[in-house]
Length: 57
Image (cartoon, rainbow, N blue to C red; front, side, top):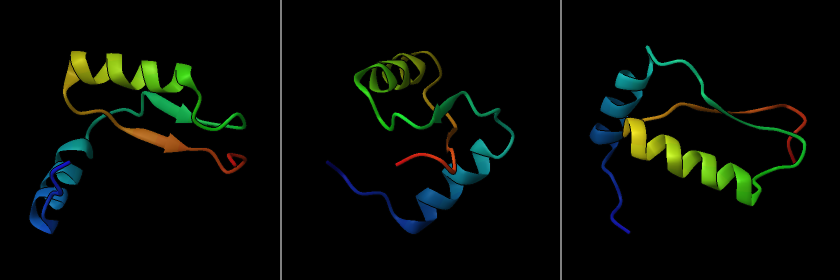
């Protein structure tokens, strides 16, 4: 897997700033369903915004 540079990471964060969060990780943590949803969203959008809930493991 190729690592991204700090400049690339900053650019992606800037691009994602205006996006709505579409994937949440909650009490059950990262499940196979969560991975599938992330994969499908990435195929459709290329860049997605995720959030981890406070009660996530």
